[in-house]
Image 1: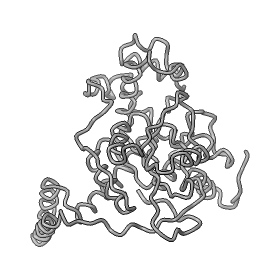
Image 2: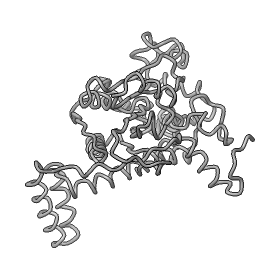
Image 3: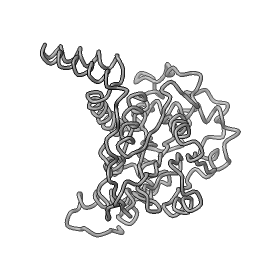
Image 4: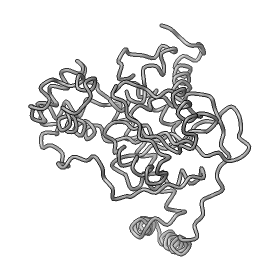
Length: 353
C-alpha cells in the first residue's frame, strides 16, 4: 500500500488533505464512513446518487469544494475517478477490499432484502424474480444473467472504470468496468491506503496512523458494524462440491488476486506499526511469542520494546505532518499509461485500436 507518486508542484506548508473514500459495494464502507463522520462531524459527506454508473468527477468535486471549502472527507460508491488533488488540496485515497465470495453473497443478501426500495436503475441490474428466489437460486440466476464466462470481478471492475484507459485502448465495453488485474493493481498501489474487511481492526489502526502522518486525526469505533445482514454465516452450499457454490468461488479470479496482494501488504504495514506504537496486550503477546520462537534474545528485546511502548503510550505524538505535494493528475489515467507503456514500451503514446 504505497503512497501516491510525487506531483507537479510542492506546497510550502502542510495542507489538510481531502479524504476520498472510494466505497466499493459490500466492503464495510458504511461503517468506515461512520468513523469519518464521527471524526469530522458536519465536514464529512456520505454521497449517494440513484444512478449506479454515475461518477464523481474531479470537476464535480471541485465545485463541491467551492461551496463547502472546509470538507474533510467524502465517502461514496461513485468515487471511481481518483484525482491526486482537488481545488488546490491534495487527496488521500482510501478503499477496502473483501474476500470475493463473501462480498458476492453479501451483495445478493442486500439486494434481496432491499429490492423494492432500490432505485429503478439499480433494480434493472438484477433478475425480476430476485425477491422470490432462494439465495442459491438467486446466485445461479445472477451468474447466468451476468456473463457467459462468469468472470464477474466486481471489485476489479469498480476500480477500473471504462473511462480510465479508453484513450489508451484499454476497454472491454463493460459499463461496470474493465476486468484488468494489472490496471487495478497499478491504481490501488497509488492509493494512500487499501484496507481489508476481514482484517478490519488492523486496517483501521493502520489507516489512523497513516492519516496522522498527514496531520489528520480520526476516531474509529472498532466494535461498530453497520449495514450487516443478521445471517452472518456462509451458506452451506458455498463449497467446491456444490455446483453453484463452485461457480461462485471461481467467478472472481482477479478480485481474489487483488485481495491476496493487498491483504499481505496490510499485514506487513500493521506488523511495522506495532513495533513503534502500543496497540494492546494481545499484539504485544503475539509479537513476544513469535520472537521467542526464533531466539531467546529476540524475545527479550520484544518484551522490552513492548514495555517501553506501553509506558510511553499516553505521550505518543504523531510525526511532524509531511509536506504534501499537489498533482493535477488523475491516478487512473496515470496508471493506464504506465500499464500500456510497460506492455508496449516502444509506443509511448495513446492508442485507439
